[in-house]
Image (cartoon, rainbow, N blue to C red):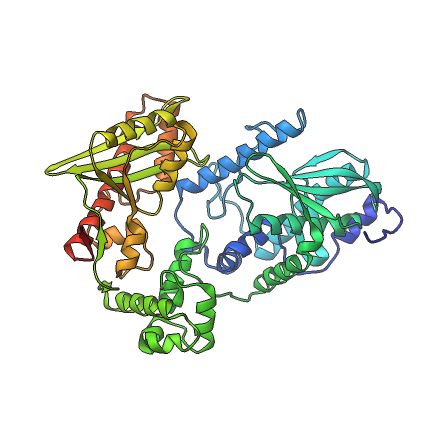
Length: 518
């Protein structure tokens, strides 16, 4: 631990931390966004606002879930200090226009003046934070921090006091961040490390550790030394974008409210990221060899790609993908793949809420000339166990059957069986149709998402905008008010359409002889 100077007055610390320095501002959320999608961070600060995504119900769910989780953990750790759930609504996501009150419009403010106003507001709140820190409060919740010489600002979830001198006196503080994710990700660690660096600059003492609390409230310490070099590289990368350097775009990796714009730019550039399954190492290797577009990749051919360091298997897949995209036609990858015959086929879709709880199991059962939709919707405290039982009873009555799902299904059903039935499941073949299709054919789509592939085949959802967020929103409305039969009808329709889409892909694969029963 580096030695600290003698304690300095709060006013002197304030002056040092809010004095002139970097012309940009970097927040903890900027660090997180940079690690998830550098191009989205660039868009946040430089793209035309008219390019933002339309409102997305799933974003409200994410924000509300994260806020509720933070409040719950704070209330458990610091009773009487934490805000109530209704005290502060989830922050408005970038891209949502503020609600207008009345008809009066606000006077135009230049970007420079707007930034100055934000800084003045941050400084006022930071001054309050410093006063509280100087007084030695045990805990600060969501305090405003600033260190403008490096352009840094933000609000960590928690600061906790520790013994040991700093510019604040005979004590200092450590950072604790609350995350609603079951698994702590790299962006979470780097965001906490960013706050740790800023706190160290403010109090003149860099804490040895910072802490992250996961969805279960488990407190895990992280040694700052292990991440010291990486966080400085991340801060430098963010700073370069803030100074106007545009990073590469990557199809499918844009973050709301810039996901659609990122995809549009990738398509305009004919970027290699349009090739589904293209990994970063291969993309860099190809670009380093002058192959930067799908058209260039197609012209190069699989054999030449393999000579550039791409594995032969990947080279063949990339070339087939490029041919499919440019021709608009699917490309066969090999001989037909065998699948086991069955008395009945079940096309399965499992829907999970933000909490990870399964709220709906959809199944389209097909046996001979019979075709029947089953939708099991969770209601009440034991709803998840109940719908699992109903689904398994239905499957058990079909005889020898195979269940086909897209991307996820078997793992979730097995997890539910382990949770509610000691792992007991009836004999049933379960096949990931997405994985099977990817081995058989290259689709002329940028990704192998069910909606992309099924719509290319001509299938249509009754609600063209149907997605996970809309369905979860409808389910939540229904559970809060069971009289909302319209909401129940919507999620049943959504489930049926998803199951029918899986069926449509299955039938197409059979019709085109990409798979054969044996």
